[in-house]
Length: 557
Image (cartoon, rainbow, N blue to C red):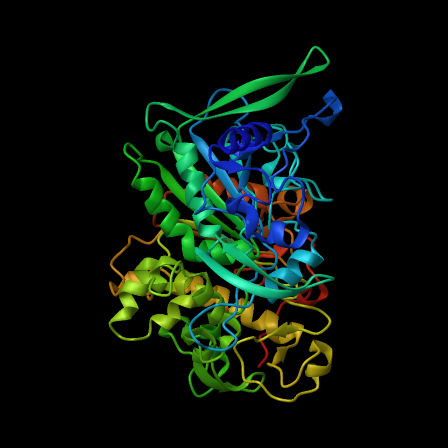
């Protein structure tokens, strides 16, 4: 009788996959953050399908296969949003990521176990679970902000090249810059409930790789992902089915990460490319777009230290891997502790995102960087994503940064750029930052000067002075590089209509939009090409330039 009761109960309960009951009492769900904090009737509800034609959208939500080893931070099932290429079937792909904040478990007692989940729980409460789980995701979406969808727009009249790509958004729910592989049993203080224990999943990198596997489908020469969607049939909503080509047959795969996901993409672009190339039959071209992520790097500060670089207009020290020095704006600094764990604020995230305590850091950061530096005991440099970009990323890449980006990780007006790897001290800026001692803060003029020098030195030395160029890293060849740096005061980039379609830069009498620059990059050779539109270099100017660049630009100390 007991067995019959159990069988009947399971038959009546909603199932999300064989063996998992969509109920918080099921072991699969019971320790998840969603169940521990909210205890919903169904931890993984199905979104309502569009009821009217007016509710149809361009992108369809597709859930990844249920896998206890690939989950959103709150335990829910990762999803992607998919829109096939407009026109005939295409073997070109655009795979996009979004940025924003991140979190990790903390090892507060320094015993090697990451037991504290307070940071992640606080974000979860503040954001009502958004971007940390998928329970509230819609069945369809246009992936739009208040300023349109930019590069994701399927309208060939405004986006003629990329509308012809299969477009996939990997929905952010690992909350780890799409970089994590970890599962931790943690505890935290929750509103009303008090102390709760739950399992914390930072699986962002796993989600990205699982997405590529899903898109492979049956493999080269076979159908790829097949999924259900909704279409307009004579003014009524009808269920339909879409089948994409296998990504193993891809001619080109473009990964684009905005802001913090551009950070994660520095560490993972070569990993994603290798994962694709490991698919039988894959011979496609893989490229990366790091959108809104080329802020002042620690290796660039040496250019402003007279003892190390008397004349940055003549001497390029960017590729010398100099992490210490003294400058008038930053003071005497040593950036190594920020990356090697001496200062926990940054390196502890990577340690927490490792799959196990025995996993090598090369599973999270660029593998060729780790291989090049392990013998010299300075693999900590590989946690610096800009060192990876300067020396180790082989995937052809387009990079965008706005000189006047208002984001707090960038220009951050009116306070200024926070030098997170700089020396801590009591200084006037601490009052604005809200804590003391605090790191140095660069004024807008100081910050812009550093971006200009960094851009110039990067373009000057990437093909001749990097570790890839010198053979210290043997994973080459070096991919082509395109650099786009307007001065328009916008953090939003390729996902914004105004920045993607309207923002224009002029150099040598030629006007180019960001869309046009991206399209040129996609058709350029995979190696050897170097192109830039950088405000203040080679006479380049942006039509929306700020006062800082109105009458030329002189670097300041």
